[in-house]
Length: 117
Length: 118
Image 1 (spheres, rainbow over the protein chains, first blue to last red):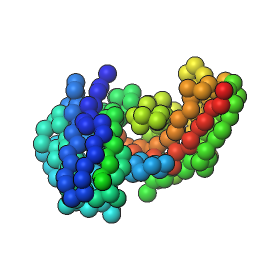
Image 2: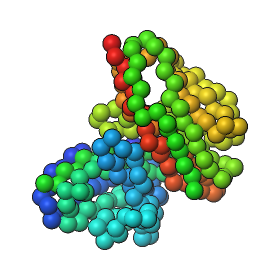
Image 3: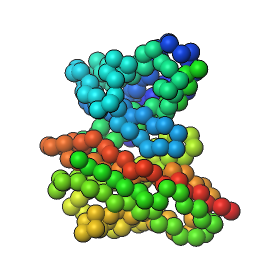
């Protein structure tokens, strides 16, 4: 079945540095990728939607300049957290949208746990 | 705007008990999809089921069963004879049809933490 490989699984970085998270679709083309953030004991909140070759669409309240999303190819989408601060510490997860014929609808990455110290 | 409500924040049961997780949704669309996911401590989301708005048939898969009722906008999930391995966070989610052949944004409920004690 469809697989989305997300790396790194976890990362610890210093405050003020940038972190890049990658999501690769291994055996299919991901035209659209969704990026979510999940704080401890909370639900998944959609941050942005990225379409290959286009600028990402951000949800209200999400800072575009802080969370840079690039979807330059059909198999790779990246999220860069710029100038990270402790409040950005969270679980980030990507999700590729499938076609309407897809039984699963979406294929999720395994998530990245970001800790900013 | 679409919305998913899981009123039960936490449920605690003893092994072998049956447990039902409630899910109520709101949408203006006539075509939409409903999902249930399991999230173990590792964080990875495990797909459990997808149901489209035109298919109200209930479904059973092993110890899992789902009851979809459009009249009450509910899509409840029952685990029969629960086991310790069922302990996890369970999310109900709603996706509107994005038109044509694709799914729209996925909106998650707040999640229900299920703890099954031995």
